[in-house]
Length: 331
Image (cartoon, rainbow, N blue to C red; front, side, top):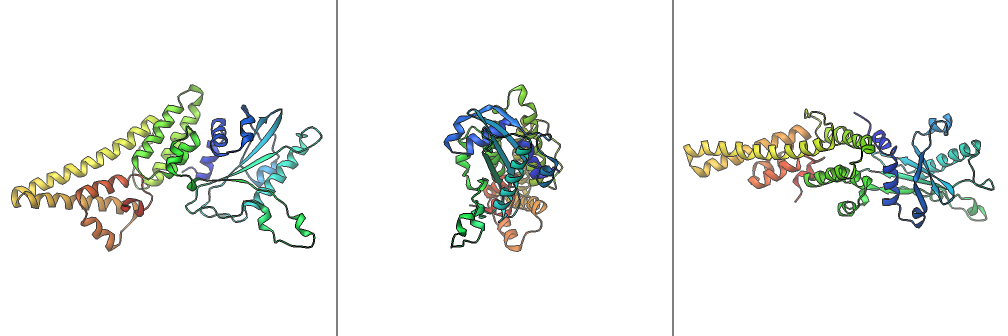
């Protein structure tokens, strides 16, 4: 499976994604001065081998007024917060400046261009590391204070954005974040429908394919590791497949439960037959959950066995996108 970090780097190799990242998540006045038509990816001949060996991330430049602004994007997707990220950013910026000096890519008067460092983070816990290297250095008095450097980065922590806030944005990056945060089928379907609408142009075919591959390899295969799901080829197919799966599973639980109930009802009465159908559904839901998350404890197993039919159907639908048991059993 394609590494999650690498898949995000692939996304931000497209100028549309970089533009939407800046427009949607950098709320500063100078953004309005950027000429996004001039977005240009810094290629390997521009960044030295030494810099690439130190960190292989995404570097763009874009016109800012009459000059170039270098946008350094650090894609960081670790399960744990890196407490020394600010120090890493300072190192990367220093190396980038050395490269620019060597290539004579300076402002008039031999001044260095401004750099915007961005850290994207999608970990479960919230980001708590210092966002300025200044805060990593012991404060000393007596004249040493002025030597503490100030270099900060812009943190974009996906978990800090509410689903409603993201859904209001006509933004490709926001749609990606919505898929990452999705906990129900309706939000997944809406995000995919937005992507279908926003990526219609012929020259967006490669970006559309990148989203399709990500949905299949990172989203679907990660959430359904034990299911044999055929590979999808486009976003329309992804929407149809996910929607059809939910409908078919729900229909199967209902129909098989009712059939079992009717057969039992003919022998023992309608009331007992319906209860038999509910128990069948409970058994089916339990088997599906344990197939995805492993054997449950006795408390959760009893919870499922005693649940109402409507509750079992709801849990079964949540199972489609759930990444943990708490998302299934939530109120």
